[in-house]
Image (cartoon, rainbow, N blue to C red; front, side, top):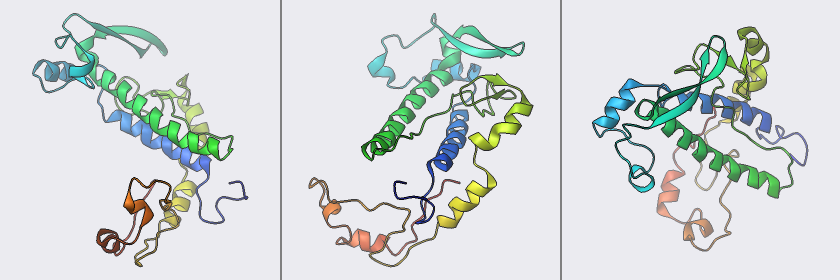
Length: 221
């Protein structure tokens, strides 16, 4: 990035990475289920579902009388709704997942800051680009503001990977099978730490030599 066009040596620009983060983060949030769910209440009551670190962080493992406040869309606007905690457990777990993702991005941004790059990667609002739950069927901008479907269509190329983005990333994903070689889109581990001999002897182990015969693969798409 500091040398010029990051595409020239086969790099991926940060804006393309950001759009892929927006895409995959929003779809990952849907995997937790709806924000308000009777199934989550039933599973919790049956002992099949719990909050993150249920035993360590919570004393009350019944949560029969607790409530949870969340934002939902009502009459074309965002309003707060109080629901029984058991019915909101999907959202409780989702919030913990968001925190975990924020930690990952903090590490990425630390690397950028160390290189004196002013740009950073961020998470979109959890309401953005959702297809399941309370926000499905509604459109939000990257900050979580309710917008019209027309505005979303007009601006979605700013927020989500375009066909050009996908084709470019796909064009970089060439397998490397020659022993002792690494695909140029995988950064080799540098011998900065002596805690692991593997870091110091990248290709001197049988498992590494065998693994190098298999195509390396990674994809944002």
